[in-house]
Length: 249
Length: 249
Image (tube, rainbow over all chains, first blue to last red; front, side):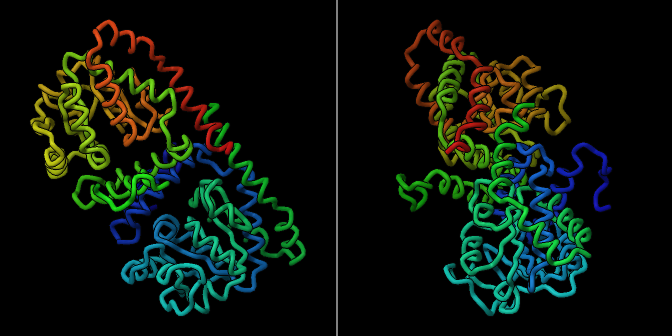
């Protein structure tokens, strides 16, 4: 274990998150904007009751099925994703045979390399994003950079904690997009084919668990899982939970 | 103006906030925890509709009256308060004849001095908190430090963006406490005699405006303003707004 906090401590998840974010700052992975974004996420998670609600679990199962159906799945990793779930992202990539690609809102070579190294330290064998030999149309030069054999080529992308402009530009490119975001009203989940409204620390391991559970499913069965997922209903359920959930208690 | 953003820009307040927080980080005033706390505040402000709701305006008027009634009012300043509203806190202190005292959750001499200097640069003539010659009972040594002729002696304290433990310990000491916090469910506003659920950038100038408006009021009139304020109703109104406000739009 990376902290001394016992797993059954009532604040285990929150203390683990704090520990990982601090580590991310020390390593030059988490930015100032990343710390503020983490705080926004904390507030929405608090309102959600800090748990995976049933509609989020359904979204995570649909995400797993969609990733398994992909011809070329790519998992996008930004600073907070790297800081919060480095090993979990590597495990998910392994479970579904996806690429990992680093993508930053404020791109600097130093942070790109720090994040790629951090993923390798957590077991990744290959990390894309450093070639930056293709561009997403509709975004400014630095923010549109992707790898030609990575996100640019992908049919399915998982973009956790993604900025709204980028999420829209990727959807406009025809990618099937899976977003993880704790605010169901923000543009990224509103744009996504599969919006996952959950804390990334719970979401990523649960997508992996569903992917393992679905490993032997036929393409028809996987398609049925994806088709059964109702994105509008899931977004509404998350909003309802925020509105009436924890606040009623 | 400190930024190039015009005041009528739809994102003026959010851009100004961002600018001030960045400045605070550059000056060693805003901590990592402060950045995360800023993000939590942003989420709750978003749910409140980024405006001063009527019950918050009533709380701000009651706060002004309570501060004017005080024998010895002290305004507590932590890292985020200093970064976000340095000049506004100095103006409020002048308007009501209160002391300013620096108080940090993670106290270091360097940050204490940086914050005191920043307040002086924004017009403060005296800043307390560096003597640290008294202690609030019930808090660990470093966190309980206050000035004997400052918060320790005060009958009314304004503690914006305050930690729950400290807010409770101050209330236990018999202080009449005014808290500014965007989460009506958190412990600090629940503890306060006058909880102000509003963005500090809107709240502090509005308390000052009410104080100026009430400058000639008699003590009876001031007491009537304080007595008319219903803290339970204000907390409930803020919760209701978060629950049904922006989300309905």
